[in-house]
Image (tube, helix red, strand yellow):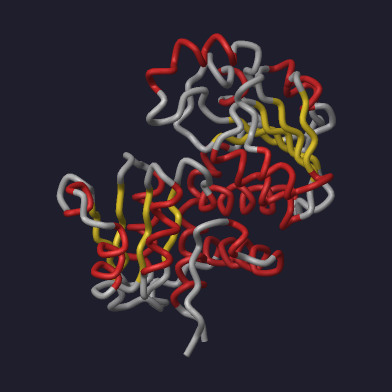
Length: 301
């Protein structure tokens, strides 16, 4: 019997497995075979505590392409929102489906589900990490620029879940990550320390972007942080990715953003709608990366 695999963190993969997933996502994108339905008859339960566009569509469409189906569950419609212990929910849901994907607030929700689930559990986003987005981001870079090993990525802005997953990607794919965050909004020290010399922290975006091959940012206030909006706008006002920041990077540098974006805040309209921006190919690649992940978790020989 195969060992049960989860995708709670990017670090659940080895370096070679991550590169293999990226390559497979590109292959699935370029050579779609409608008759290839490896997940026929299989069911993915999708638990959403946070609203979603790209995550929901990519997993639902991916399962449909592979001949399976997806079930949307929200706390409003299930006992999850009424205080049923997570371990009980995990045991019950996993007894009826073939895989569970959760997009939730607390990282512990996903780790608890993984601990008590009898089927693979996927982290569709938590307050700590967003590994599925990194699969799509890295696929996009590999498609357009080749292997990211030895390159420099600049993260500008909040040291949030996306930043944490970029730190993991730097470790697995062997690139240097420059991080520029305002004081008080840096990534958690445990993530930075574990990645060692690959991570370099800067006070100013221009310094972090110097010579970068890829520049990435995210919203100043994520879902659930709306009450901090005014405070965050003040803290992040000098952390916009604008033309000046992109000019500090290499001439062929790419710009990425996981979306949704707020033009005029974390990124200027000139950059996100400009020639270096690949945010829409990046978003589209969520579908292909998710399909590669589902195949990896559910079709192990």
